[in-house]
Length: 121
Image (cartoon, rainbow, N blue to C red; front, side):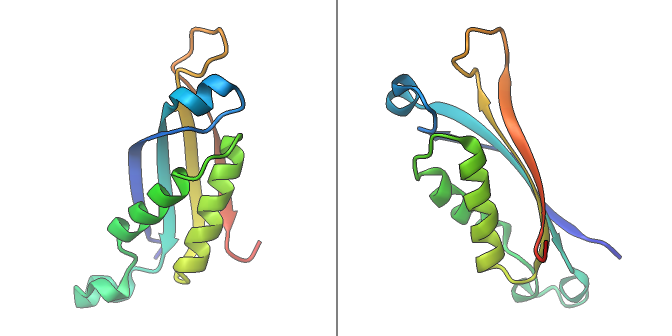
């Protein structure tokens, strides 16, 4: 069995970007996470300690989003590293991070990146 924990459409206001405007005014960022975790013991036991708490994951993500970076690639990479470090049962992470209405002179809803990371890769 393959099993996943996911957090979809996390909306966080942050100050990531290259231009002075982005770092001063900020923007809304949307984040999707898919964490590959063996959930068999949690399914059988109904014990929170045998899974990964999505509330704790959200706290970790929020703390990383609060640290300024120029590039969302850097932010996403930090989030992946932190989640692997804090939660040894996570085997793989899919993360999608986008900036709403990026200041690039285009009629665009969002621009972003997507990473697919395995713990041992």
